[in-house]
Length: 207
Image 1: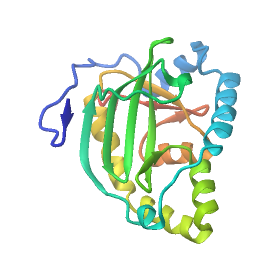
Image 2: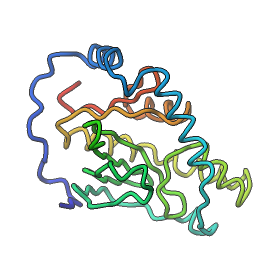
Image 3: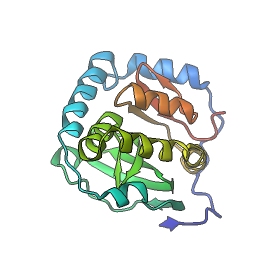
């Protein structure tokens, strides 16, 4: 189901939270074996080598004149992640606004909903800030990278709005490990709490 105009809510009623955001995050991190310190560091290291080794093709025009999307949401989009290591993740929501995107997927093995923030890089949605910087700088140099970066950061309000809308549409909490310090700062700038390098996307029932 795709909604270009969000006139109806998918939210099924999360109910009144019995814990504050701070209480929930502390309890979650204390008891979760998937998001402990060593697991977070291991995943960040894995992502760094994985994403920085990828190569993407886009022209300079595609990079600096990429499409600025209207607000849209696609529930259960039927996307199949190409890498076999991600085949146990099933996308449940793909949302876009401006140059930004949020993808929520369910880890079917561990029964956890996770999210990623993606940004349009020449028509390709990418998520690792270091990998993006390296890729653009390698192709077109630091000046072009800074120009692209200024363009997408000038559109940060679109991401803030997207976060607000997604929070209204979900009835679950999605924790995700941030890829690097830049990802952590981005989450915090758009109102997503981060604790011990784990970001938490809460439904709007949590104030």
